Image (tube, rainbow, N blue to C red; front, side, top):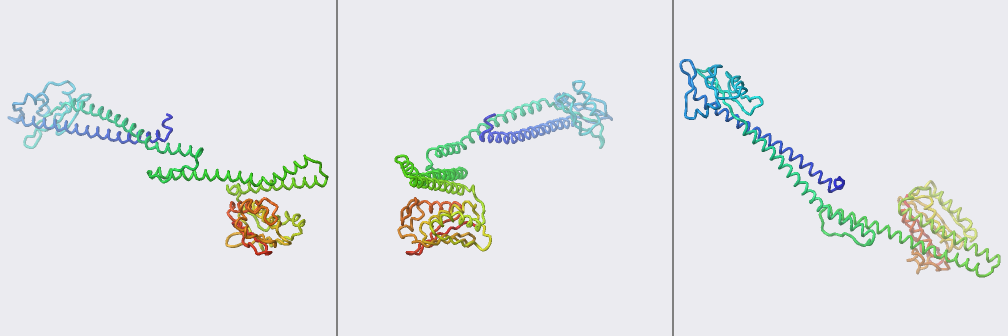
Amino acid sequence: MRRFRTLRGRLTALGLLGALAAVAVLTVAFNVILDRSLNADANARARSLATAAAATVEYQHGRLRVHEAVDDAIVDRRVWVYDGTRAIERPPATPQLQRTADALAGSAHVFDDVPDGDVRLYATPVLVRGRQAGTVVAAQSLAAYDRTTDLALLGSLALAAVLLGAVGVLTWITVGRALDPVREMTASAADWSEHDLAQRFGATPRPDELGELARTFDALLDRVAASLRHEQRLSAELSHELRTPLARIVAEIELLQRRERSPEDRSDAYAVVARSAEQMSGILETLMAAARAEAQLDVGRSEVGGVLDRVAEGWAPALAERGVELELRRPAGPMMAGVDAEVVERIVAPLIDNALRYARSHILLSAVAREGAIVLSVADDGPGVGADARDHVFEPGRVAGVNGHGGAGLGLPLARRLAVASGGDVTLTSPGAAGAGAEFQVRLPA
């Protein structure tokens, strides 16, 4: 029973059922046709015998008489002749056969079988001047015909059994060989997914079904490899982006442990540790938000004006400390973005942080609807992006320390990654000449 739970077993069972139905129909049809053919032959023989016997009967002096012929001895063994209802010729017969023959006296062109016997009788009339004067009844044994039909039935059943066995074996072997490539491909795909994700089935010529299966496996392996690369990239970015704040925390703690420091120095050290821990927390949350967005687990919608208000309110203390003004140009009416509000905030926050590092006195934050998308803009009046950094501004760590930059160079890459994961992008639209500032635009789906 376990074998029939497999695809091979089920296909074999279906093949056997189909063969069984076909063989059953053919067997029944063969035996029915043979039985009818033998019945017709038995009737023809009985009719021929009765006709031949009737030719030996003649009418003389108002009575029927049997004219003796050479082969009458053979005819007489199976023929009754009746003058009216009186038998004038009667062969040896069993009482049951005799009664059946007597019952046919006076009948014309009638067949009858002996009850519980293997003899068929046929009655033909003897006509004198157009009227029936007597009856000839001939008997035909059915024993040979019955043996033939029995042997044919047994033979057809044996042949059907052999055919079904052959169909079952051939189907089992054929389906097994047809599924062998599928089994091999499945095992290869499973092995490659664990040990060698670079392997593919490629464009090797195969039957259409196997070619489609190979393409499906290749696409599945591509997705597994992409997922693994994504996890590796996420791990690498986590380690890279957490290295700087973690190093500052470790350095401050080591200094606190090695020598005695004044209360002011200790307070400054605690502040550095707190800011670094906060930066690490922000990096982790941003990376997790990007991961959720890439997996399409955090797709939502948000009202852009309300999001910008919260961003401005959250950055107000840092702006006041640096003496920088944030100008917020909210949209005139409700403007919906096809991104969760938390994701929008985490995309904009690194851009505000970047602008705050370089702005002299003014930052502009605005939002407009453009070509079916929401475009957020963050512009500052700082020195702008240098020519040597324009091509690498979105690469992690490439602009760290440039123009007095005190961070790790991770904010802009994180912002772009999160925007791209959400179906948008972050671009540097105004590199700026000396003293002209820089402008970054965030494009998000509406």
